[in-house]
Image 1 (cartoon, rainbow, N blue to C red):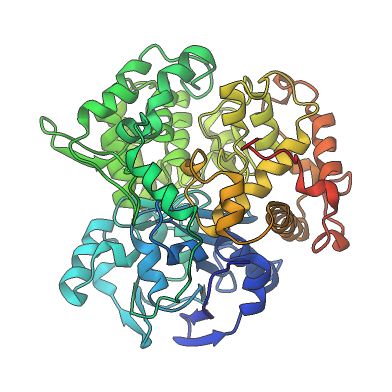
Image 2 (cartoon, rainbow, N blue to C red):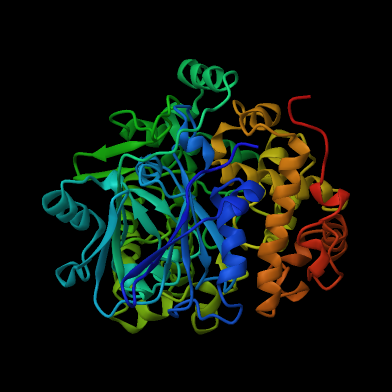
Length: 566
């Protein structure tokens, strides 16, 4: 099996020491990326750790496909104990970091401890240096990039950065790279912020020599370059009006299912503001969205669909430029646009201020600084703030919902309920099957095995690492060919990783009581479907993982067996 190469680098920012560890055995079992980082986190983060404590660890990891020149591979993974969900979380970001990271020769870099002053860590293949940067305290993301360029002659593609939100322990703070690409969900920016790590740079000339199978790699790259997908022009916003008209676009903090101004924030509106092409490292697909509005002086990358929802329909805002401004502000402050937008929407509901985009931006700045009572409350996220606000707790495991409404897409609702990461749409992606009609959106029973398959496959996707939007190009048989193993073996790895995430969370007291939806009475047979899911995974009825299921998840735990290419 093709795997990532290189040792684990542990960076202790308390005493400013580093240690290299041979993890070739872990990589041989877990590929790289999310799977390898989860295996390490499961074993190395204390089960009783405080997410903001020095004992928590944050992992950056790459996979074997970042050694290739193939499209859809400009991404990498980040894993840690989430201050938002209080469980393990993995998130990934695109841009141009992954190959610069790989050039250091490490497959995984782990951060532990806590510095007593803001710190920049410089990781190279010739050594690691620590730089105290007190003057960067409170700096926005682009200002950090300017400093790194001036002082170290490196670009934002070499850097991960924590904005003011991470420094101030906003529970949904993101880690930024290339200024506008985010390790977004779960608050890992606040984890680095708690360690006083302001930025980390990566550079070197020691990328491992890994040969990726051709075919299919050249075919994938050629197809990405020559395809004429609307995604290339409009990114993920291309489906906004279709979803609004045919399913549901959560509106005004989930009070409504349809937004009357969807056209004003949808794909055509975004495309009208796009002024050039944008891509990730080595990718010919070029689906990113550099946008600008000259009249208001706004320039950003995006917004993508989830931001159109969180700062648009969910807040009752119908002007794409308002959404662009919020998107840019989140990037500069270092916040996940989904959680930030939904949290602000909850506040707008509480104040009867839907549609007030100027107030939304004002509140965003207060959240990032925590300097007002309002900002300090909202920085905790919806789950911890909803009672004081007097609104419903629209989260799962503390994570705010993505756009795809589980009240309409019942399989996606089931996915939200059981996902170890909470209400995140990328964990399994049942939404795509239900939007397309491959699965009937109605009902939950009988969907568990397919859900297991999608979760397991997505582990492999995040471990390779390949882009979530590569599905039409990196099909299941091609993925197996690229990773040089049987597809079923890949699903088994996915099952072991999902089990490790759940097992770690079980040790923190999480069980079936955490697998729920705030609108469970609107999703038929949810409790029975959750039990079907546990049975398919080989887990106990209380949502816990038997110890013997960590490395032998069982035949059913790989899920649905039909390959998508058939």
